[in-house]
Length: 150
Image (cartoon, rainbow, N blue to C red; front, side):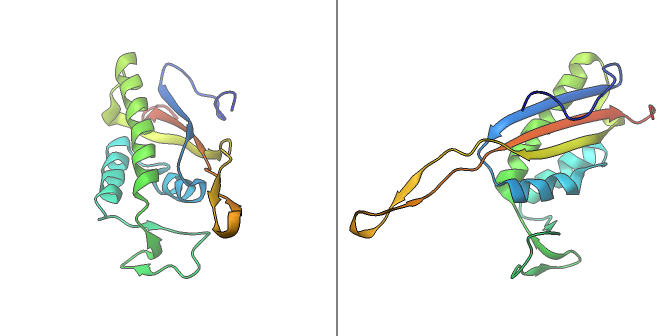
């Protein structure tokens, strides 16, 4: 991953990136889709609700044999991806405050989760055999923008 996927005006936006985080790409994509376009304060509250197992994330793609949650449909509580997205979002908020921008007036303009490198591994099995047991990673990118500029 070289840089950011979207162009942003540095006077009105703040950016943060997280590289090769050891989390599930599929669930991270669903969490990113949930908070995309939200105001920053609401996005942080939503992510904290997911971590506290109060706010379910609706699964749009990989939802076979997934139990339904009330008012959501098929959904889960992906705590580990929510913690990673919250960490990168908090980093973008701190970058905005460093620039002199108010995080209360900002919204999540761009949030993407792309697959990172796969760390190869194996799991020992019976009779001297082994099975692949690889660790998938995710590259996260967050751009928050001021509400007045559009």
